[in-house]
Length: 302
Image 1 (cartoon, rainbow, N blue to C red):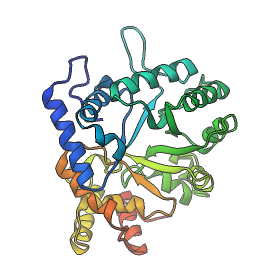
Image 2 (tube, rainbow, N blue to C red):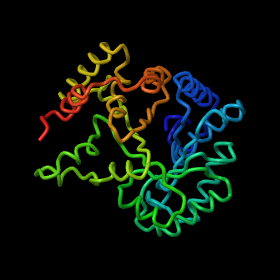
Image 3 (spheres, helix red, strand yellow):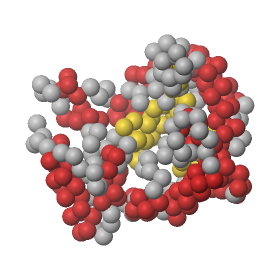
């Protein structure tokens, strides 16, 4: 999301392309080969500068996985921001992303947000058509619960293989939901209970966006709980000879559902600080994992 310059119609420039090259290089040096986009990021400029890098290094495309998302329409003129998963819109957005990314195929396409007006049969036909044409290899969703995934999958022969949701030590409702059952706090949690279990049972990989919580535990603490958790993370990082960013990602990766964190940064130093999350198994004991969770929530478990 950080590639491409400003969130307006101003064109990207040489410095934006250079920044993309630097970020991609840092990722590859760290063992990261999967890159997550969306058609709306920087109004399309994130995909476009990435495409510029691919055009300058033709061999790079064979070494990486390119994922993008569609389904959100940003506000424009008198039209409000809305969601649009009509088949014609999905196909149009994919063709636009392919052109910006300068590639002939998208490895993974995610539906960015649920569209209440979407017809599952219509959506399924669009995805099937894109696959038949060889334009998209694999599919998934983003920000959806188990029932929404199941409703779409019922009309789709191709498997939905990914669900990208916000997950971090700050955004913990996905794990809180499972322990707040039969408590007075359950209703306030809001996360659709059973989503993790559904994804695991059906082989759907959970991708965590916002995995580093915008730095809340690695330099941008705001609350007492965040300060105490950042201190705990720093101690664990030192003891395990790694970085605080890696410990924050390990907390997600340690969960048995198999979470794949998305770093969400274009800063080369932060990307490299996450290398151990790729190159090492999550080095957190059962107790350490719980200590981080309880510290971040700022209260004992029920």
